[in-house]
Length: 586
Image (cartoon, rainbow, N blue to C red; front, top):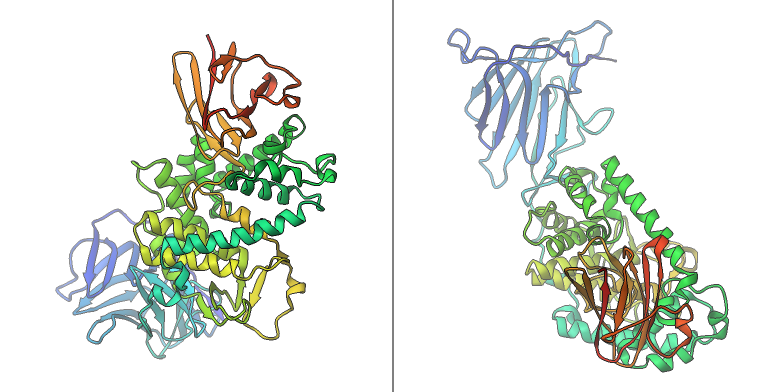
């Protein structure tokens, strides 16, 4: 079966046109701008497209891959539209190789429809017509296997499988039935409240449920930390202990194996010290992440949204990359986004709004479009997994990835609250509480399946509660910041901190950098301040304070500076809630 590619022909530029015919839009270029001999035929040339329901049907131009399909081997010639005829709500394109394509916009019923049919020469088996989703459209898998295109909040689909060889090419059979592309009636109106747990309806009841879960985990960690040599467990336990006012007692429970071993990392060093042995690992991890994100931006890859909190991180660590990342987002084809990137859309929108509130948000209406995708994947199931409580999760192909649902719930709730969308905020909180309800002392299953014949939990792994706790931190304002390790920016000279303080800020006047750091009174913590150029002196607690390499061994504040890394390491024993660290450059 021979395939005749549409020829590329150079035409002189003439008048461009865009015509609205019913619910479809036709865009192309007139060859002369005059109809032929009063027959209502307009000669056309160059690029030619028909737009309807979030799709572009390309009849001529660079992205056109269509043409005649012949049952024989004899060439059929070019298949470019040469003339256009508009009759009512029908547009007829007469083809150079003989025959014609007819596009008819129907709107007499309840739903808009585009009907496409062809009239071809006798020796032609059919015609391949190029199409592609617009960048503002999303493509989902429909229940019957046909793709569903979401455009302007409405769903569209073809009436049957009509492509040949590969998606993006429709097959119009000679003397076959017309192809119908039309709005899909919703079986039921989606109501977010149908997928909301009672505890998630209000922020107070959600906070109470989350606090109850944290109480249970803290009691569990207090037992586990005495016998485990586990960095992540220690970090979660001590971070939670600071907020509970049990920090000093909690530190006495840490196992000697951990305190004297080599498993201590740059997270626990914020509570227990030892930064001199761990800061290079943080520096390496940070450089690797910057390099990875820079590469993804250079490649124009939407996979950048698969990284947690990209725009918050770049705003702190590499502000110069933010505009390039924003440009990448603007050029993303929503139809090309994989489901794994969905949380990154909500995170990105919220973080751009937080760090650049006055500028244009490159994510535009992507979050709203993404809510449509989520609405088709939300599933409410009985309490078979959580002692009869019931839960709501996003299932894809019958599988729910619990860590994905946790990240999605957090990102969705943050976005919806900042957007004033209470219903979707409750759905986000529901996803979080549904995941947490699965927890026992061994954690939660990494995946859940609606298929009774699916592998058992031990075959797909489990996630411990420490990992879930870490996933719940990460945001500046939802839930309120805890005393958990994080990167914080000062917005001054590229200086950034690795700290467990929930609040840091800075003011620079003349040659003095004044950093404000919050932590409970009488408690001690450590922090790294990166990007600090060489200085003359430092004041702690309102007094000049000398550096001492043995600062960690004293029951007081102290500091040390690594000029080769422009790293200032501080130990602060708080006399007041907010301590001032003053750096003098004069």
